[in-house]
Image 1 (tube, one colour):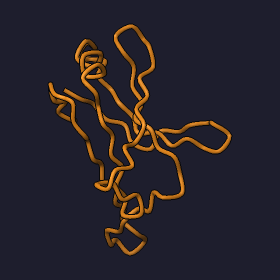
Image 2 (cartoon, rainbow, N blue to C red; image 1 turned 135 degrees about the horizontal axis):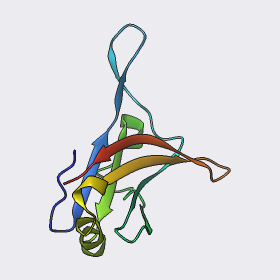
Image 3 (tube, helix red, strand yellow; image 1 turned 90 degrees about the vertical axis):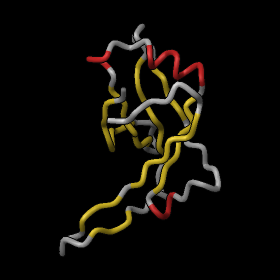
Image 4 (tube, helix red, strand yellow; image 1 turned 60 degrees about the vertical axis):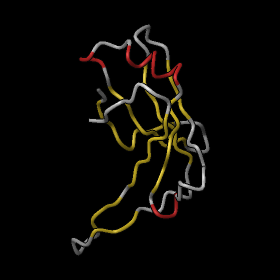
Length: 105
């Protein structure tokens, strides 16, 4: 679960995986487009683009999203049992799949 701040800020996610030998390795995220996806209490899509700041290095498995005050207000309005987010991969044909799903508080 992610703790959602009351103030706008960047949220950085770091992705690692275990290889076939059980060694924790970095996931290179540089070859795809990622977005943070959720829904408002009205059922409207909230899609947040990565920051691509100097603090984010997709080759090292890092993806960072800035959640603005207006999006925070929308997210805080969602009932607690419906507070879900996903980091999605957007393919070249614009299809998407969920890479990581989580809740927020």
